Amino acid sequence: MKNFAEYISNLKKRKFNVAIIGLGYVGLPLAKRFLDENFKVYGIDVDSSKIDDLLKGRQYIKNISIDSIKSKINKNFIVSTKFENIKDADAIIITVPTPLDSKKDPDLSFIKSALLSIKPFLKKGQLLSLESTTYPGTTRELIFPILNEINLKVGNDFFVTFSPEREDPGNKNFHTKNTPKLVGGVTKKCGDVGELLYQQIIDEVVRVSSADVAEFAKILENVYRCVNISLINELKVLADKMNLDMHEIVDAAGTKPFGFQKFYPGPGLGGHCIPIDPFYLSYAAKRLNYQTKFVELAGEINDSMPELVINKANVALNYSKKSINGSKILLLGAAYKKNIDDPRESPFFKIYEKLNHLGAKLFYQDSFIPNVKVMSKTIKAISEKKIKYGEYDLVILITDHDDFDYKNILNQSKLIIDCRGRFPFKNKKVYRA
Image (cartoon, rainbow, N blue to C red; front, side, top):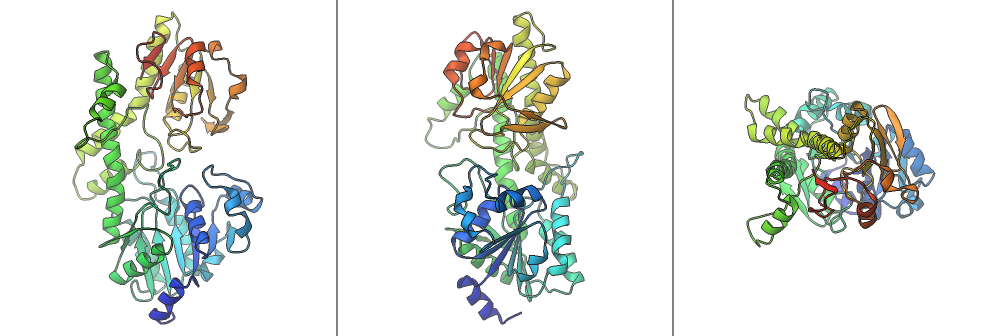
């Protein structure tokens, strides 16, 4: 590698090429940030449809305008499904999915596949930063063996960091640039390089003592939300038995200006982190013969919420002398949260599958997600212009997008299961779930 002083100088002068592996909800906004600061970016994704969309100027993530990056494609932004460009990169950032397997254990296959693909092109003088959410120790366990095989010495001629993504699609106040960025190196020198790289594109970079600390901090952020949401979901069931509105209760408690943060109940958790991270933490704990009982219980409670929705649907229809079997049911919202086009881990899927198994005739509406794959088939959303809510035996609000005409839905619908607190609690046709 070049001498270290020159290496750092080139980084500060933007004479530094960045490769980003994974151009989804994390990787593409990150690529845009580097492009905005005049870095050359190599974008790599094994999903050829994403590369094709970029090359043809088609937008596939709603909150990233294709017009903001179109002029840079094939100039400062080189996109491909192939990994050869890694050899020309000074920094390599991995932003691939980390889902769960069928046993709810961490599925690190995407990270492992990315590492194997870049391995032939790694060289001295590169920084490798992992951003994919994972359990503490992953960065060392997965990356070190590969670097040892090709005789690259971490902290000397090759640098490794963990810097967790903190993307929140649909958030109008916080985005990649103004969201503080954690960085932890596997050595001090690794941390120095990683910190300096992210300082070029992020307003505030928070340095922690190690990659392990950064990995644990990311897990904590989402476990915190998971546990608090599970508490509210459990109390929602109690409030329902008392014929009280949990949304009103949360709002009332939220008037206290200290010591309380508002979390709202829902039909289950969705997204790429909150439903998954507790299981990553419990997996790491089990490797040390420790059980995170509180965290595991929170995961179980949140996983049970779709079943509560089904039970409420059954009760509502029974009062109308109908059953789920044969009923025409409209699901409102397939995204995991409102006003975004991301369906990952959405409770929509579990609810759809359970209702389908019980014989319901199912339809859905979501202007953000015009079609969705469920139960190995692609289904299309019904256009709002064509919908007559009164034609359905039951309407279930799963995701409360702001563009739904709630007044019209309430006036026309026969029965509503409200999972988000958007309809009047005391209305006879509304059931909270």
